[in-house]
Length: 188
Image (cartoon, rainbow, N blue to C red; front, side, top):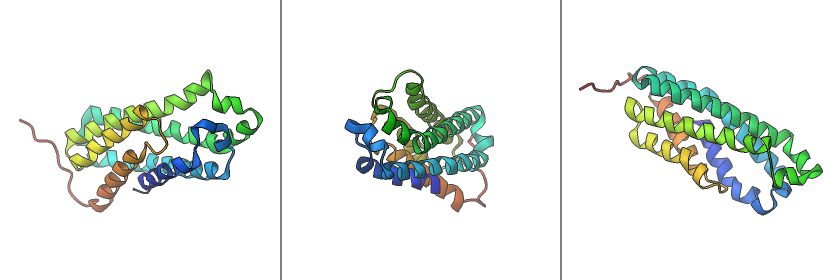
């Protein structure tokens, strides 16, 4: 729940922190480092939270749930590493060699794309498994799916807001219903 809330907060900050016309200039600011420190913390919290989400639906979600969990976990772990680099490495690179930030090439493009794509794929699969397992609210699972796709389609500051809202809702649902029995899908 807290990880999702931090995703919402940091995405709401993005339009005020990141200037895509001067990315290296933005990267070298204290506001950028603060925001990305919060993003790093959000991913760390999500890594723990996804275990709770999966544990609650593991039997009902089946193989698709396991695949979605694994892809979302690995993608989120890669995002944690990406944001670590944005906090501890990127500001120095932005000052010493701004072109590496403004016009990334080679493996830097992979660093920018792979974590986001794998995380999105994982959260989409995880959301679909939630729909099929019927353990979490269908609307929350649907918003999770949409929220995972939006940042890939719209690479704008703040585009992860919907994903953060869905994760916050799902976290709250898990936290507030921790003693409720697990519902299994109907067969037939």
